[in-house]
Image 1 (cartoon, rainbow, N blue to C red):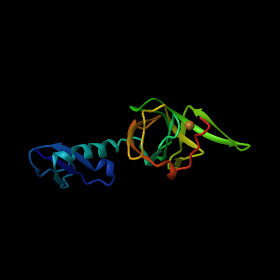
Image 2: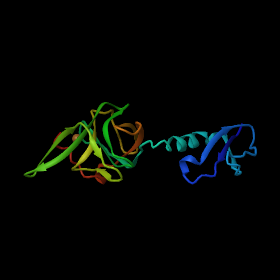
Image 3: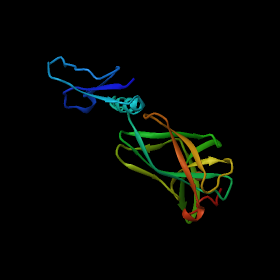
Image 4: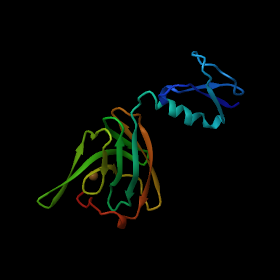
Length: 184
Ligand SMILES: [Cu+2]
């Protein structure tokens, strides 16, 4: 069975699409009498369409770009990424099947000495790209299972507003990233 998408003649995207599950497209008249366009899409597209419609309910979303973990040289592993929220939000936690716990950290350097503090949350101001990078904000997997270049680890990010999101993080050569965790 295909899914029939009925596009109403309205200007706002989020009010413009209705999904009916039916065996075939049919002619539909809107209440105002204007004809509506119908498109039939494969059932496999239902998840995508559902996501689009859920996105219409002003559901905050956070985009995660270039998640990366340098191959650990010590007991812990850092995860870097660029996070951009479309509404004011905050990263409030993270977890991974490869580590018992994942903390939010910030590295600061004072008088040439690097130290790391655990944060309760990382604020994500609307539309602003927050960069998790060596020497600054990062996620830290505490004593993860052994990770090697070429592995991909799963990490679930929890936000104050947006739904939790699972991200796949490639493990890259340490030579590709500055190492800032000698102080652990
Ligand atoms: Cu750290």
